Length: 156
Image (cartoon, helix red, strand yellow):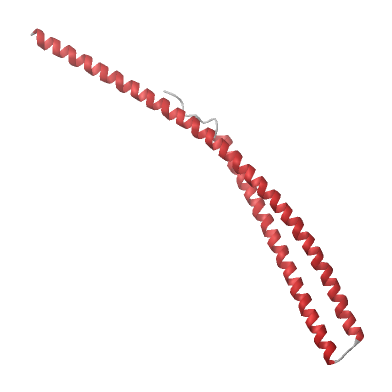
């Protein structure tokens, strides 16, 4: 009787773990992108609020120093937004790399899974063949016994 093929079981588990790790890396990269986008959005909202407030103060009571301070802060926020945009682009590139790594890990796992299935199908076919052989031998033996009994009855 053939032995169950186990040669790909360990490799399959390793590939599965690698795929899970790559999926976690990809999810982490996506969370970083989302956090950076959220931060950029809050900076943008703060900048718009600052501009509105500067506009209102300029209409009510014009103080050049105060308005200059508002616009300096607005320029600072604009630089922070630009920095956030470049960070978002960098994080998106990292996330894309992680996605590619995940897809490669999935392909490697599927490849091993197919090899494992092929070996298992060969194993099951060998078992069915052995079972058929045993069944044929039993049927042949039973037929021989039945012929022998029929001959012995015919003699008597």
